[in-house]
Length: 553
Image (tube, rainbow, N blue to C red; front, side, top):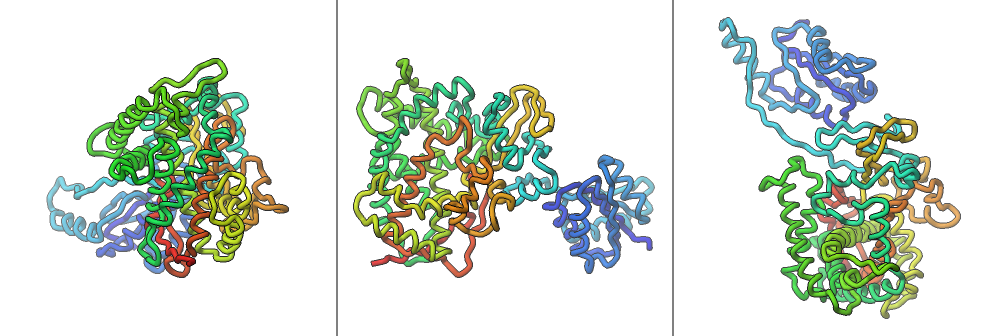
């Protein structure tokens, strides 16, 4: 049957976008149309499923054409036009959305002016919207299942190859032939964390890491732990709101971890300069998320420009602190970096110290914030584990903590591992090929950006039993599911670039949880509450994660 309008939609493996395009056709106030969907070489089952779910609305007004391989945009358009008889044709791509009156108004205009001999179409008001994908690991698990371990991401911003699965992660992290460098990070965060340890390679990286490692030896960690405990005990007791469902956990923990980092790394007493700490915290937040900017140039007032300005603020701030610390004694990380030498007497320049401090402060408080927040949520959602962890903390008591006592909190270790498995703080591992090479049999030319996604490996059924379920015992004997593949569990990275502050971060988070469990019962804001995360950078709970703290005494 002839229709007034043939709507032609071209699509290929875009299941996140296609439903919106289909629904905007079904929502039209004008209903004399037929919809032709041309699946140009994509997975047919997903397209058929989306169409079938809307069969009632279509009422036999939809035709689907599946191409075994892609014929290209123009050829797909011609296929759609040839498949339908209609007075008018409109191309409606899978990333387009129409106003509900779009067809009604455009058809009315065409009909009204049908006698005009040169009228061939209508130009309507159009808004271009820049969208970014902020989905989580489930998206990449699905891509891995459908497309395999090496997937081309045809991004207009940074064309990249996704390295999916534990075998691909092993190839990147181990980097046996030194085929991959860290410069995959450069287009994303290079402008904001330049010359940080994570952006260095090979011999230069090892030189800087050797000096920096002196700041994280066990004897230093002993002093850091004492300082962490002092800050945590004060903040948790005096600053956090109790018996209030409006208390937002994530920003509170973020402020706490910055206080910790300010004291341990800078020697600042917590709460001594709240205005300054707030400015520094904001600057770190801006720089961390600026790497996701679509407009990647320093043009005000866009995100990239704000990130550059925040970086400049941090440089000025830390340069002043370095000048204060040179030649002085102290146990804070900044002073240690100013004074530490390697076996040949080499030490960091002022610029080196500034660059490393900016990176370390970001890494130290953002990753710890994510880990602690996720753990607190899971303990509130699983009271049996909360009580198990509290029992161990009770045996430790309320006295000062040290490394040895924290190491006895074994249930917290299990909960921590399970929490960062389910919500991995660092979502990506970014690399770039330094020469032509291959990845699991796929050719990669020199200069190819490659990204591994540790969080998706943490959700694979071949490694983890019932991977969506919170089950800390999977990390304990005899199960040891994390040992089924050497690179199946890599929340701290792997190879030469494995997180240098891993042990410090674990001690910090355990101290926070220990003090919380000794003082409060953790409760969900409502039964069945589950946070949703923005995965645009490190995972951030969209609602700030409200949690109720009930005093135990």
